[in-house]
Image (cartoon, rainbow, N blue to C red; front, side, top):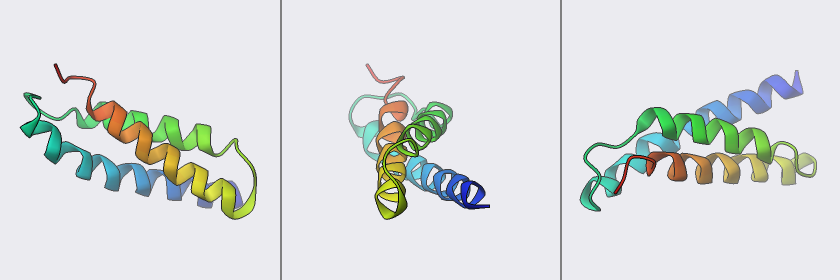
Amino acid sequence: MKSANQLVVVLISAGLLAGCAGGPQIKQGCNQPNYGAAIIGGLAGGLLGSQIGGGLGRDIAMVAGAGTGAVVGSKVDCK
């Protein structure tokens, strides 16, 4: 059950961060934000973050990984 809760946290974080990541990149030369890559990057980052530590530290690592992955993923299509 705990892993299901962690997965929900990762999915929600990735979705929220993917939506936020699209705005500034449009002004920086991207034709269109890459929402698919942002979601995949957020999921991958959250999954990698879940491998670190335990308890609250693991939750923080998951959110940080999801955020970083979403931002990096959104820039895949930038020039």
